[in-house]
Length: 314
Ligand code: NAD
Image 1 (cartoon, helix red, strand yellow):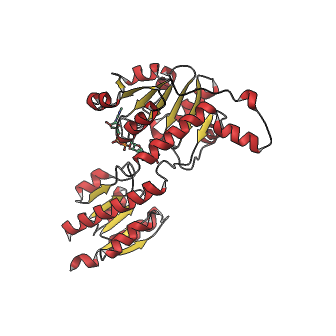
Image 2 (tube, rainbow, N blue to C red):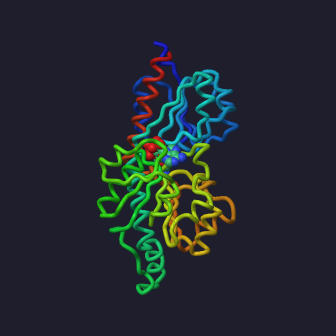
Image 3 (tube, helix red, strand yellow):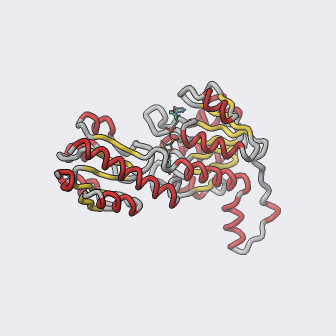
């Protein structure tokens, strides 16, 4: 059967279950973790399917060189590293695993929220360095605070559910009609981003990176937030104007920020490092989906979607 000859290239590390399922189904699977764009363009012509996570950029140039490509699989959520429009034009299907990382990102967001409110990373660092700074470590409780969720999709809703368990008030803003979903959870819908920013003590961002969401949280938005509020971004770095964020933190307008995602990953510019090292900033190196459960689920889902897509096309 021709399907046995199909070749699949994986260019970012995925859970081994993915390779196992694909090989068991009879596919030839090659891995080239960390391959450069130039190398990828040279070799992609040999493959029927490509599996990536967030690192590999599936650009126009890559797609133009991919004469045999039928499907691109993204193990994860967020398709901003794939030129989906160009893929569609070339008849290349794009599949991804939207549900796999929802809980992992939501739980990280809660961890970041509590880390900010109780200054946990600061307390840990200082005690390990021999400093018992109890008097300086006064924090806040989540109970009774207003948490604003921007983007009430899978992750936004999962964060809302967990925040509600802390007896906080949750308000949400989305461009889609979220009234019914919000009502079901006990979340209040606000009619504009501005209203959410004005009301929330903690703002958590959960929108995809799209042309309309690039720098959605710009300087004006940051200064619309309450003085002393906190900002959490586990979506994409480009959604927040991080230079303006640094300014607002230095001026004391915001009490703190927690970031899992950055414009450059790893941060490249001096001002990005200044932000990362700011005492009121808690950072993690894009680990939102990095749990055993999420990685395994993404690997299985992407493998199954690739098999389905190829079996339709071979
Ligand atoms: P989703 O598609 O379920 O939800 C996104 C929501 O944002 C939708 O309800 C959509 O209507 C809304 N939205 C779009 N544009 C908006 C705008 N301008 N203003 C307000 N709302 C807007 O996606 P999801 O599964 O919840 O994931 C959200 C994002 O989280 C992903 O696109 C990805 O970028 C990011 N993510 C990060 C990690 C990580 O490792 N940190 C992991 C997974 C996902």
